[in-house]
Length: 104
Image (cartoon, rainbow, N blue to C red; front, side):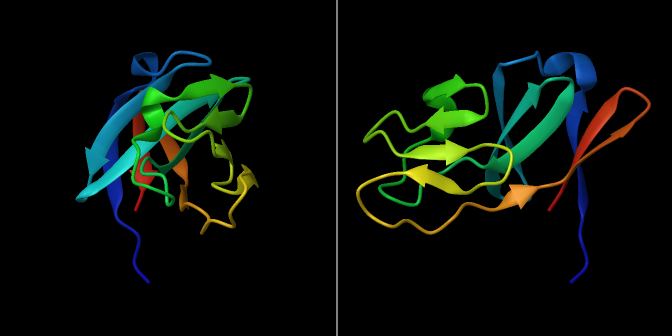
């Protein structure tokens, strides 16, 4: 499978502990910076379709704004929810000069 590199923006666009929402390759992605490292995963909750960037980020735990599903923004794994939900796709973030890219 060939990965496409999609420009996200400048490294300065993503602040420590904050979330940035982009649409890349027709997919909704949420990106954050934690402890100096960048992470990206799908932005749409697999439970009811909420946009996760509207939720709360506490360390690497992203809480869905609609029904409280908790996701690990570093891996896309579900941390906790009463139902078993399909994991979200995690995306590798690349940095070249001061430009951020996400592999899709």
